[in-house]
Amino acid sequence: KNVWFIFHPMRYTIDVQNLYPGDDFVDIVGWSFFNNDVCMAVVGNDGSRITACEGDYPYSVSEIEPQMAASIEWIQSKGKLQMISESTPQNPIAETAAFHKEFIRRVYSAAIKYNMFAWSYINQDWCSHSWTCPPWSNSRMQESGKQLVASYWINEVLPNTQ
Picture (cartoon, rainbow, N blue to C red):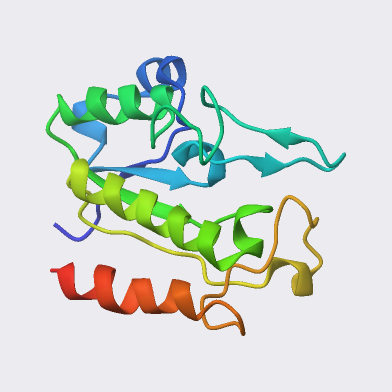
């Protein structure tokens, strides 16, 4: 078999369940993980803080947005491989090392909890490529002041990969 078909829906269960093309047409399900998906706020274009969860980091009730959790669990019941197709922190999370590290920890925790077979992290300075900032920002772990993030990645995530 030379081709795998990947279904990559939004996190909302209504989208996942209504747009799912069927078991015969899906090999892998890919998910996007950004701030709201792990119950961390994002700053909108108008400067407002937006969150998809009850409360906001560090006060959020859960570490994964409930619709995302329900969607992942629904796909798990079908026995499909799942992966994190794209993930990166947005403002304001990417701006401080402690929040950035917490974002990585939460995504990593979800990858372990839901047995994701792959994880793609976008290590990019969005603003230098003319993206709208905010909500995008500099998510590069190697940036000055972000040694805490790179250290967590190197010492916690990498040794536990397969």
